[in-house]
Length: 357
Image (cartoon, rainbow, N blue to C red; front, side, top):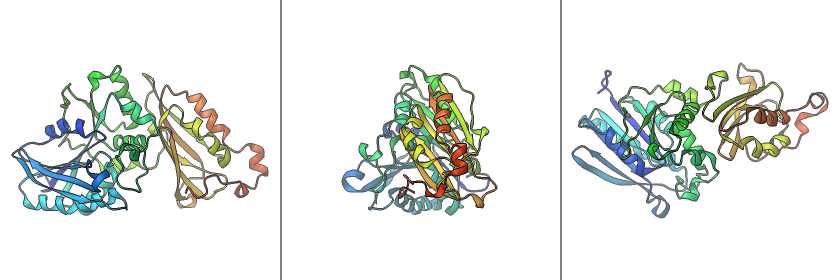
């Protein structure tokens, strides 16, 4: 139990179920119970299989059915009664939850924090593959194309999932680092994506060489602040070893058609970008900007009048071999010109994002 008499929980996420196993083993001690959720049967049978174990061996197992709606939502709803039962037994003071490969930590943790006062989240650990990390962050392959989607509505891509798992983690276990030509560069990349995280190397057999559970590192407000809307200069990390993070800002709105035409150029060389932008044809709306790999998405965050900020654009982008001047020039070219600011009827501009958000 924690000092408050609560059961502590460590959450384990990562795209590779194989690399997860030695890390999971390192997290389980005589006072720990583990809940392991797998999704191997999801594409064929529509179920997530789960097993409960401790150091004595297997305790229980079963399945969660996933319908045609949000698979992550159904997983969370199904997990809560199981976790409540384990906590109520008062036999263990620590629970390790190994999530299925396509699960993000943030929605699961937010639910636990809001609905299970008898449990405290202690550590969020993410396992990443040093050999595949850059590839996973740089492409546009959908989870569904790999058979990893959490249900039919899941249209996330591999890069988006990988970035979000890293961004919420207190600890990142860098597996297969002995097979990487530039492990220090990967450490640097992880620090740019999430300076809150502690990077722990794994030995050649996949066993982490440092603490990955019961670290006390999890800070819910800090994790939510980093994963939520971007601020500005506090997102920047020192460039080096081929990794750069760029901050772009403007007090002028973006021309929607020029932005749409430039999307491929904007994400070229960028592994991750996030921000809030101002579109000329939607002058009152705060628009969320997010990209991962070769995919970019926009969505509504509310009205500018609901904040203390004047309408503006702020984007933070991280890349490998990224040319900051080139990226800033591409984004600047999407802004309304001085003459357009004075003469255009902004809301009459064609909207290439109509129906998208």
